[in-house]
Length: 401
Image: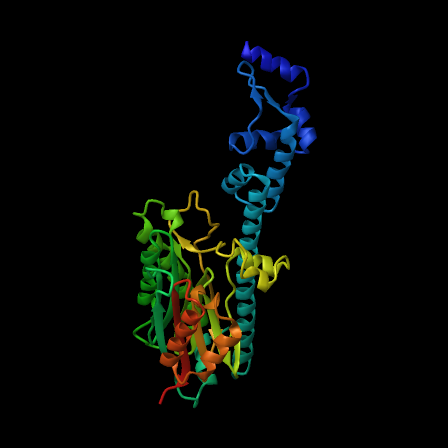
């Protein structure tokens, strides 16, 4: 009787056929059948005898939402989560997804522009060589020639972490060595293990042998491999947690080749460059509030107290299934050209979120060396209330004596 009643309902206009619903939703019947198979949009009724699908006209809005999300390139698995949310939560999820797309597009754009500049410079250099056929030479050779007589560059560095005033455990990690500078800010049950594992995974790739600087192409490949290694290390480190997708870490690191710095970055830890007395932020936060600042919907002042300021768009995490943060596991990588006299600061948000950039600059400028700089910076975070763990690393680029 129930089946007969529902069939009568379909015939009487309460439900509509798939063809009628296709016209209502402006989707093809083929697309609707596909959405049904994928579990994205189930019919209100499937006749158990002939298999005909019937839809409630009220489902048209949901069907159009699925189509729009497909149009912006959202993966099917994520669409399934979005359509199950209420309107407000769905809006947050869509914003987070699109901000991640824009961040990844920006990273690819930066890499493309670097490659254009790099290959153009190589072409000009080769054109100046008598008998050159215009084939690109190695970036390492070109740079070595450009530095002839200037003396080799090295980095002098220091790192420091602090639990802060409020927390009882420290999930931040930092490292400073002649080839590697890194900070990581762990979160969740396995946060301390995740941050330590991410940095440890970078150490074998830090070219400790020093047998010549790699070319730009080799360095980019090495950075990609290093980023993948860090992602795997974090997944393994938090695999035993009750909710591995809720544990992870940010990571901001620089690998020194002797002539260039390779940057690996994911999350909201930061890298700054002090050059000519000016402090420049050279990383972009992978966070929801940063995306809202970027699109003009939030000011920097409002971001400091936004209730979702801790929501990351990208981080290194365990296997994601139902995590509350929207994440991607692949860090951004790029190359950073250096000059003698540069000073670099890497820090977790336990410093940058509570100390403004003017005070950061003053502390970094005033310090005689990296050791003094990290002590000053941790002191500033504690004076500001120290609500979070703090990690920082500072490196000076100098001509080797």
